[in-house]
Amino acid sequence: MVLGVTWYTADAWVKVKSTAVDPDRFEETFKEWEVIANKALEDLKKSGVNPRKVLIDPSQFAAWCMLCNKENSASSRAEYVQQRLQISSA
Image 1 (tube, rainbow, N blue to C red):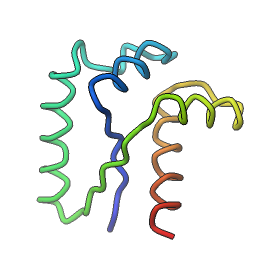
Image 2 (image 1 turned 180 degrees about the horizontal axis):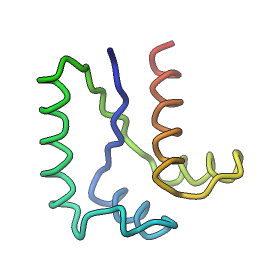
Image 3 (image 1 turned 90 degrees about the vertical axis):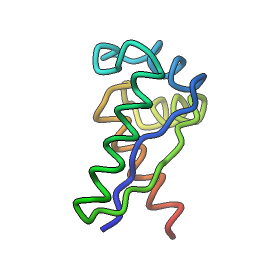
């Protein structure tokens, strides 16, 4: 089973967080997020899931949100990642 995992560069993380309707869903710092995200990847692998990092480009994500009439929210970020994963796997 392949699962798309939202992934950021430090700059992208700051930009996406700054425009999110739910900034409280983000950790306080990128470094804190990075530690938690890497741990989550390891846990997924141990459980038999094949996690695939899907790098978020803030500009492309914002354009997708506008096109799809979505807010920058956790559910929209997850939906975007799954769509990107499907496109990259096709």
